[in-house]
Image 1 (cartoon, rainbow, N blue to C red):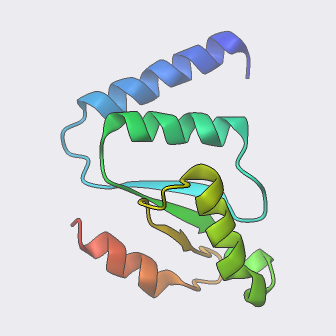
Image 2 (tube, rainbow, N blue to C red):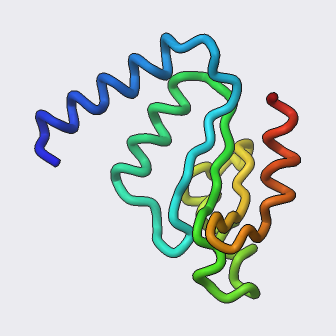
Length: 110
């Protein structure tokens, strides 16, 4: 994506986050298999600056060993949110694992 296109996308995101009154919870998806990219960090900063409640979902949790899911999720949280005040949960949309924890959290906002 060119710099001009990135600028336009950024403006759309800001417009939506700062002006849409119906948002009750933002769900920020990130790939559990990789460290956050520069675009992930940019999106995280947009969300933080909007001041809206959000959750970080570490998606594709079925693609790593089950024994590494908790540690990897915690590492992602430390990387993006060192304070630890933003819930970071593992998730797999494909295999529907960890879904109960995610829905329990989301239901607090709907």
